[in-house]
Every structure is written in structure tokens, then in C-alpha cells.
Image 1 (cartoon, protein in one colour):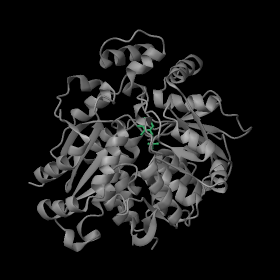
Image 2 (tube, protein in one colour):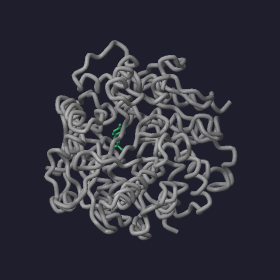
Image 3 (cartoon, protein in one colour):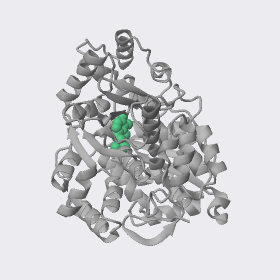
Length: 500
Ligand SMILES: *Cc1c(COP(=O)(O)O)cnc(C)c1O
């Protein structure tokens, strides 16, 4: 059985079910397996397969202790009619390139791909599956969100038996639509709270809460609750995203744009490095990926790292019109470093130590060279984002959201390799950010985001997703705003209340 261990130590080995249940390793590292890619996926057999079939094949290779029947059950539940496109992640031509639409799920952002299935993965880990002593144990999901994860996680976990979920988001730093999506969430087991600070503050506090032994003891004994993570640090969040890289390839095969074995490039709007890391996992599983191009917004810490080898978070934090990419600590980079450093856990532990203590680290030149052979990088400031939205509309009559626009801008400035198709991952529906998009298109933006949605629908001829348009009349349930140091107690109180 292929086991998982921390990126920072191999001392403790767990199954994929245990890794998914736990979320993050006890030493603060992320779960990885050294068997990644040992069971490659047959690329030639992809053409003509449905998304669900591809998902079962890819997930079987990544989660070895789930049975085929368990995976089939998870996949059928996660990728059903809550998606408004039968292809789940349809690929469309965009100029000389292609765009992979990842926003057809219930919350209109790509995070639905992972968060519709993660609760189902977790349900298969309960009680007897992992520890017979834990039969009555409840999992409480704890998530810090820069805007989109929170809603997608709430939608995935709402009223799932045996689970609860608490979501923290940075107060005033998410869009009106994002805020309403979370604050109006229905369900008996959900809690939403704003935090004074930015996303990194909230995420660091959540990581510290996971490492808080006293709290863990208290929750286990007084609330029969164990904390887990739905952030992309959870391996169960990461692996479902590997699937759509294969699904994109299958659609290119069907369109006869490529033959099996031909290389493809992907450009990915990036924040926490989860989405693009899934592309690297796909490459390790045998998908012919020439390059993975990271696209950042003005918080371009990844661009600097990939071009210089120095990761330095000591820099101003910018709140931009692409809030889900406003991140200075890209957690999943740690997994990428682990694989490129050939599993040198000591090196990773020391780099992460340096990041925690000094806010920065440098990787050796030979390591950087290996990384650069796979990963390209670019970034867009807010004017470039707006110009890209306008340019894409003018050239293609296709509206992109501000996150996707960072990728559009990056691709436009990346030299094309002749004969290698390029796929831009579109991470959100433009209707999640209707004001920024409308302004970018040079249209007057009305006062409310909902009037902006209507104006955008009229202009583009495509209706807004009903779940977004309907938020205007939805009932706000959550209004708490707290300080970072109060998050631990908030978690304690919520877990205790939900356990009753
Ligand atoms: C989360 C998110 C991203 C960044 O994805 P990562 O996996 O964190 O790199 C980009 N765009 C949108 C719309 C998102 O919600």
C-alpha cells in the first residue's frame, strides 16, 4: 500500500484516507506520497471517455486505499446534475488557444470541482474505515478563504452527516457576491465569520489552530470532534483537480487538435498553488505537459520566486480585483518543492522554518533550474487585468473574470511553442465579479452588484447563473466579525455548539 507522509519528515506514515481525514500533518507539513506516478494513466485511452470515467481512473491512481466502488460512488455524487454542463469542465477555442471552463459547478468557481467530492471522500473515512474507536467522532472542517473556497466548501459540506464546517474570511476583502454567497449559506452544521486582517493572517491562524494540541484534546474529549481542513493543503482537495487536466487532453483528442502523446501547455491563474500543482501531478501521472505557466496578480511573490529562486513574503499586500489570488504564502508550493528536491524532507523543513521565522527562503540554483524547466511564470497588474478582459471580449466575444484575465495576460506575453496547443484554465464565472468586469469593458457600473450582473447579461447575451442572481433576495444568516487572536475560542465554541 502506498502511504503518505509529511513533506517535512517521513517519520509517520498514513493511508490516503487518514491523510484526507487529518488534512495537515502534525508537524505542519503537507501530506505527500513517494508513489506519485507509479501507476500512470493511459493517455491514448482517454478519447471518448466521460469526465466521470476519467475521474475514476485518475483518482484510483492517486488514492490507492479507496476501492473502485467507493470512488465510483464519490464521483457519481460529486459530478451530477449540480453542474450546468454535461462535460463538467468544457474546453472551448479562444483565439489561437483554448479555454477550459472550470466554473460550471454550484458556486461558479473552479473550487467546486474539488469541494463537491471532498465531503464524499471524507464520508468514506469515518468510523470503522480508519479507527473503530472513533465511531461517534464528528469532523469539523476549518477553512480560511480568500473568497471562493469558503462558499464552495460550505456548499459541499452543508448538512453532510458527521461533519460541521467553520469558514473564516478577511473582513471587507471579498466581493459583495462572495460575501453574500457565504453569509446566506443554509445548513444546520455551518458557521461563517469575518476576521479583521487579510487572507494570510486568517490562513496562518487556521494552521496554528490545527497545531494546537490543547484545543485538539479539549474538542476530542468535550465535543467528540476532530478538526480537519478543506483548504487545498488537504490532499483530498488537490487530487480531484488532477482530473480536469486529463479531461482537457481528452477533449483536445476528440477535437483532433492533437494525437495521443502530443504535448500541451497549461496556463493557470494561481494563488495557493493548488490548481497548478494538480497540473504537475497530472504530468507525473503521464500526461504530456510541456510547460505549466503560473499566472499571478499584483501579489507576484510566485513570479519572483520562479524567476529568482528567492521566496520573500516581506512585501506589501495588495487587495485587488482578483481577490482569490491575493496571497503571499502559497501553501502548496511546499509540495512542489518536495518533489523537485527528490523527497529531501530536511531541506523542506528548513526552508519552511525560514519562511515562518524570516518570511523568506532561497532555493539552491540547481533546484531552481529543475523547477524552471517545468514552470513558467507571469503576472498582471490591475490595469492589465482590465485591459485583458476588454481585449478578450473585443477579439473573441467571450467574457472572462479578473482571475482568468491574469492568465490571459500572461499567455499573451509568453512566446508560443509552434505546434503545442495552449490551454488557459478559467477559474471563475465573470458573474462572480460583475462590477470589475463591467468596468473593464468600459460600461457604466450601477450601484449594486446585481444590477451589474443584469447589465453584463444584456451586454454579453449570456444569463447570470441563477444561484448568483438569486443572492439578492437570500436571507443573511452570519454577521460575526472577530480579531485574529479570538479565532481559537470561536472554533471551540462553534464545535461545542454543533456537537449538541
Ligand atoms: C482559488 C482561486 C484561484 C487560485 O487557485 P489556487 O489553487 O489557490 O492557486 C484562482 N482563481 C479563482 C477564481 C479562485 O477561486
